[in-house]
Image (cartoon, rainbow, N blue to C red; front, side, top):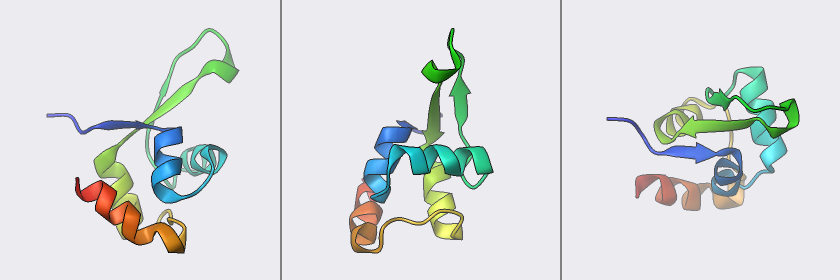
Length: 78
């Protein structure tokens, strides 16, 4: 069964960072996701599996804003 897929905006909201920071994590390989094809490069969107976000946070590959860490863990537990 496939995990819930999250957009860069959703990941950013959960981690307390900007969507641009999430895209930079994806491009740098710190977070794994799938880039959807689009007619123009600026229209491409990324999707990240919830389990990948959980693993990246647990392994320290990406970090949530310190004040929001408890909220992120609670949201991911749902």
